[in-house]
Length: 401
Image (cartoon, rainbow, N blue to C red):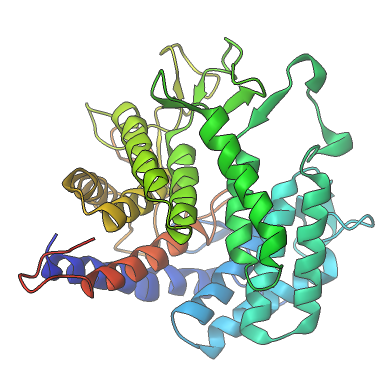
């Protein structure tokens, strides 16, 4: 990739963040009467449900705090973060300190605190808000949340668990993935000596349990002995989640200067995309079955926003760290397909849910699961990495890893 192309990509990603994505959420998601954020927002900004999901509240708190800290010190962005932080502080936690899954608009709890990812995103949101605002109470809540996550992680749903886990004791990839991201977000707030063992445990679980080097796949769920049950749950492949986890580990490997791990991770990414890419229509499948049986997920063939932006980050970082053309080619291929279909050039922000052909199945910009997180995170990271790459171009204008 030459310097001109790198600059062009960087400007595109930065512009999309600052002129389309952030303004959409700033204009339509902030509840100025009760605090917090709406996440169920139609294409044109119409709010179609005012319930507030703590997973989305924490993510948006993190998002506004992060763009304030990394992009520019816009007072309006800090004010948007403040409204979310105070709403979560006031209404988010159950008496035992865990975070509810859902509240009504005013903050009355609707769904019990069964989902540890609500806690993860609220804790990360408070950590970033503390960096933006200097509010000590936000730091306190961030640290309390992080420590509670470590207490709950082996049995994250607690009394709300539906499965009889002793009969199928599966280990999922979700927890090591979120632990890697949390370690990055809590760097500087938690001692490195406490974070490093948790990061390493997550890396080891993924690379020694979920990555199958014989079959060249990354399984979503495994037994602790390295086998997986021959059922829909055990055969499940999730390309977007695999690539998200791999780029987080790739970032970990980069920080530790582990070249062998970097090269292996990039190779594993190729296994995931070679299998996950839809050769007929383009784009990346949401779910797949290892043996190509039907999955339990009826949305398997859909093309989702977060899957594609995580893939963009994975292959851009792989190219940045190796300079190999195969990763540049995949970044360009995913970029071209993604940017031709997900961004909404009329109302701003991105569609979330496309059918297999790449046409919007639903037009909402947010909901119970989509909010102000994956797209801005990808735009921020990609523009930052591209900026670093510009500085590493040689006299001939070509990028040198």
